[in-house]
Amino acid sequence: MSLGSAGSRVLEQTEVYQATSVSYRDMDATPLGFEKGVTPFLDLPATLPLPLRIPGIAEASLSTGANIVSGAAYDSIAAEMVDMESYACLRACMRFEVPLTVLRGISDGKAELHHVDDWTEYLHVIDENLALAVNRLGDALAEGLLTR
Image 1 (cartoon, helix red, strand yellow):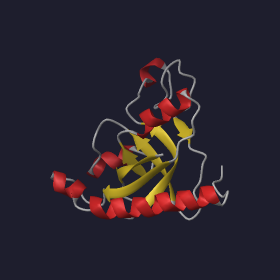
Image 2 (image 1 turned 180 degrees about the horizontal axis):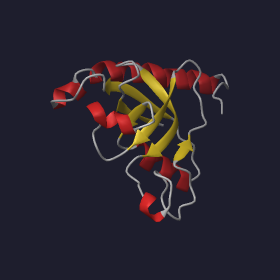
Image 3 (image 1 turned 60 degrees about the horizontal axis):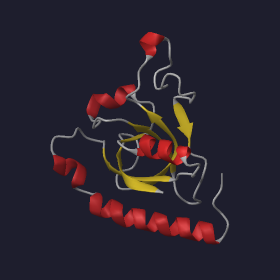
Image 4 (image 1 turned 120 degrees about the vertical axis):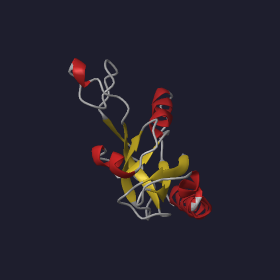
């Protein structure tokens, strides 16, 4: 389980979404003939699926990278939300054959970021919403409803 915040200019701010897939937007080996997002010789697609689903939690695609995305930077990203760590978490889980569920609360993205407060303003609300989502996960596990 990976919990945190994400940016999005298309999803509802402060709401929690479960990632259906994750891509690594920093990888660009297109000059060598590889598709953007594909790491050469790793034998993985540009977008990796996250198959587990928690009933009742909205779904969205996720892009991971080392930069904070704001304004026009969203134009080149196909995913609905962005963060900075989920791809690395997924690769570690893949290494040890452990499934990963990613829950992200949308902290920013509708407006251009100008100050750290633009990101932190709603984190307390996101924390509460993530706690409710984790409770849903517990309920789904107890009832055998966690689906692939």
